[in-house]
Image 1 (cartoon, rainbow, N blue to C red):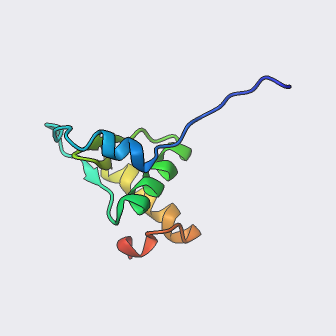
Image 2: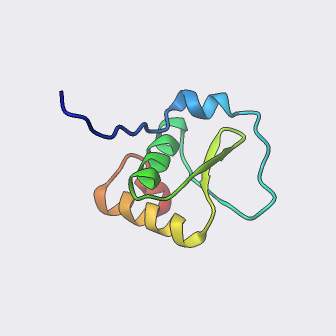
Amino acid sequence: MAAGTMTTSRTIVDLLREANSPAPEEKVFYFKGDLCQMTKAANVAETLGISTGVAGGIPYVKSKEDFDKVTAYMKLNKVDGYWHYE
């Protein structure tokens, strides 16, 4: 078996695990939709190399620029939940 790198994507369980986490002090940009759709948005962000956080069980990114990159990718590729950003 060849050695390689393995990454893990955020799951709904991860979001629920952080349901009681407080909101950050700085301005952040939350994803929209149900838990599954928000998870997919967070996974897109991670795929694009954008770090995410979770507050109150809702994933976010720290800049409008990153939010726009993620949502543009979702709309272009019709990722589940893309309609929340049109």
